[in-house]
Every structure is written in structure tokens, then in C-alpha cells.
Length: 473
Image 1 (cartoon, rainbow, N blue to C red):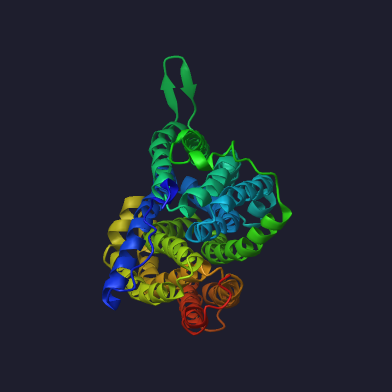
Image 2 (cartoon, rainbow, N blue to C red):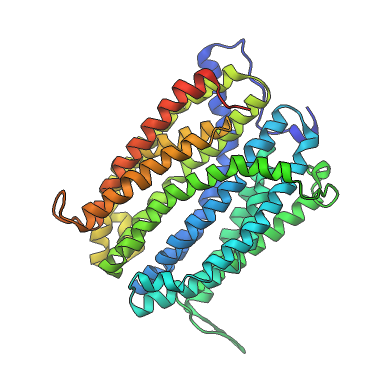
């Protein structure tokens, strides 16, 4: 083992009993996943901080930030998903000890991120027609537009950080991104306070920006974290052989095409799922700021507790791609199947948290009684789909580790856009099936869509991936 392979990723011992092997694999997941979880929570904390602080400014500021978030989150996750091809690719190179392929892969990912930066900034800064179509009240529309334009300044830092994460996570050093994500969160809190509520000290004055200030605070904290990561990668002894500048590689069409072939379905899968949640906020906009705010609170909490299964998903992708690269198909299959038990346990835990704590959680975000009541009602529905939600993301992680991304993308498309979205619109606004349900209609449809996705992805893993190992190269 070289210095750079010193990470939680180790080859398994097949002389041990089946139970011992499962427990050791779960330990490997914990070692990989714990820093990922902390990093994900830190990144989510920025959204929670934005939502809570904007909510205490006004319901319109909360709704404006919620609408803006509903537009940039799926866009970011689409490009982040494309760059997500780097983790299993680099982890596979590491498992096969193909060290010479790692930095070329990293640089092609950086080139992909540069194109993504341009496209995402253009999109976020030209959304005024979309906001007009949503028929928002004047203040909410103003906050949403200003928030998005401020956030766009931090997009280059965010996508570059995502590309570099492919290198650090792929090598098994998941604690690196954890540290810089925590740095971003620590900066975001005071910056939010300054930009949202204003600052007046001696000759320095900054007017209160309300929800728009959240965008500026997030952009600055993202740049600080990315600058810190770049300095670390170019000065750390651990990364001497992976020095970015010393190992510069020109764009390579074949490698970029290979990453896009793997990453585009990942990006589309992420976009399909997250856009489903975010589009609900857009469809609910005509029902008023209170309804949007209640939905945003529940979505924020569910996204927060979703970080545990999402972290396990990423850890599974890293671990299984490593085992496949090391040609240990038996251990990969064992891990894929045993992960279902972990997924069920996490799903049950998350459901209890949402159901038991629904009133308390709603009160943390807002003092508006009407918004609290809406949020508490939606928390009950959110609790009902937790097991299915955790299982589907776990199975996605397994199949990405095998580099199987096309069919899972189609499953997500059918489940969310083919079932949840049209059914949710019907239940919310129409009387074709039952009396219009309002916001609960969309959340009821989500339950059915997630059950469909979890079932189909699990069947695919058991019948195709974990048994036959199809398409693992």
C-alpha cells in the first residue's frame, strides 16, 4: 500500500464468517460515510440557516428564498451529479492500483465543471420570466430574483469544489471535504446575519437585504471553502503525487466522453428526484406565501435527515466501485444486499423523528401559527415515505458503484415525473379522483412514486446487478 492508499478502503478477508464480513463492510461504510455525513450536514446547514433566518425576517422573505432554492438546487444537483462520475471512476482506479489514471480523470472533471459553471450562471440570472409565470406577490418575486442573482456569484466556487471532491472522496479521504464544508457553514452564519439584517459599525454601513442577503452570504462562504481546499491540495504532503498544477493534463475528448456517459444519467437522476420536490413549491405558489412557507419548512427538515441515507449512498458507491476495481465481485454483492437492512433501519428512524417531532420542528422555523399548522400536516405525510425513500437512494448508490446508471435513471423518470408529478397535480388542484387536497395532494403522490422507485431499483439490484454483475465495467 502506498502513502496515498492510506484510507478506510481495505481489501476484505474472505476467511471470516459471513456475519463478520458483513459487520466489517458496515464498518468500512461507517469510516467512509461519517465524514461524508458531516460534510453533507454542514452543507445542508447553510440551507437551514438561510431558511430560519429569512423566516424570521418575514413570510415573504422565507417564501422568496424557498422559491429561489427550488430553482437552484435541482440545477446544481444536475451538474454535481455529472461530476459524481468522478468518485466511482477514481475509486475504481484506486482499487485496481491504476494510480497513473487518477489525475487525468480529475482534470477532465474540472473541465466539465467549467462548462457547467457558465451554463448554470446563465440559467440562474435569466429566470425573471419563470418568476412572472408563477404569479408571485411583488415582494416574494423581488426576493427570489435577488437571491438567485446573488447566489450565482458563488456558482464557480461550488462546482469547482464539487469536481475536486471527486479526487478526495475517490481516494477515500472523505474527511477533507468534511473540513472545508464545516468552514463554509461557520462563515455562513455570521455573514447571513450581516446581510439579512444589516450592519452598522462606525463608518461601515450595510443596509438590511432580507432574504436576498442569504444569496450573498452563501456565495462568499463557498468561495472561502474552495480557496481553502485549493491551498490544501497544493501544499499537503498527502497529495504531493496528486499535485494539481504539477500534474496538469490537457482536455481529452475520450476521457470526457467516458465521464459524461457515466455522469449524465447520475445528474439526470438527481435532477429528476430533487426537481420533483422543488417543483411542488413552484406549483403551490398560487396558493399563497403561507402554503409555500409550510412546504419549504418540511422540505428543509426532510432534506436534512435525508443526509444520513445520502451519505451511505455515496459511501456505497465508493466502496463497491473499489471492490469492483479490485475484482472482488463476491464482496461487492454481499455489501449490496446487506445494505438493504441498514436502509430499512434508517428509514424507520427518520419516520419516527418526523412524526413525533412534527409540531416542535415546525415551531423552530416560524412563529406564524398558520404556517406551523400546514407544516405539521405535511410532516405526517413525509414520515410515511421515509422507508421507501431511504431504500431507493441506497440502491442508487449500489448501482452507481457498478457504473450502472442508465436504467436507474429511467426508473427515476417514470416514478417521479411519470407518476408523482401528474398524480400530485391532480390530487392538489383537480376533483377527478377526490376533492382538491391542496398541498397534501403532492405529498401523497410522492409516497406512491417513492414506493415505485424503491421497488424497481431493489428488483434490479437483486436480479441483475448483485447476481449477474452486468455492466460493471
